[in-house]
Amino acid sequence: MSRVYANSLRQLKAAGLRPTRQRLALAKLLLENGPRHLTAEELFQEARQAGIPVSLATVYNTLHQFTGAGLLIEVVVGSGQSYFDTNPTSHWHYFDKSTGEIVDVPEQAIEFAKLPDPPPGKVIERIDVVVRIRDADGVRRRGSSDESGGSDPD
Ligand SMILES: [Zn+2]
Image (cartoon, rainbow, N blue to C red; front, side):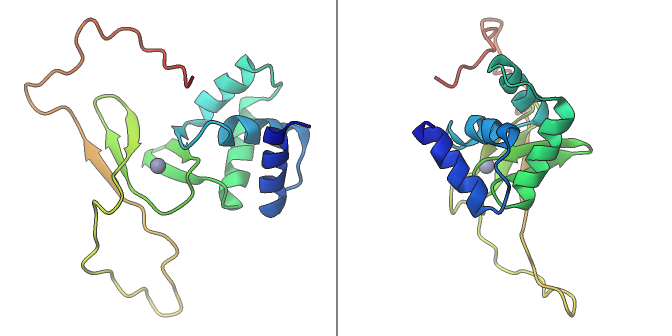
């Protein structure tokens, strides 16, 4: 077993998840490639390209199990539109309506001056901030030469 699998195995065990073959394969894809944000469909495509025989439903289930176990966070940017973030520590996001991408807001760029007291018997578990951005009026960043599209993480 490679170091990478050993790493994924350790993370699954630490998160209390049984390391099935599919979970290990998806954990390796997700957690080996540095911090990033991806949709279930994107992970599904990566899994297929890597020859991992999983269904989209399994990818969804696994992503939600990983999220429940604290390995990922889910960033909901719209109705039925979620990204999964391999950095589960507290941080904020820009969502670019023009490109459909999410990127991290720089650390400490947002400060909270005041937070509400939670209702009696409740505690604040987490705060989500999505800063919604779009191309400034009249500024078109996407020239016709920007057609390459494909982004290899290498
Ligand atoms: Zn993020």
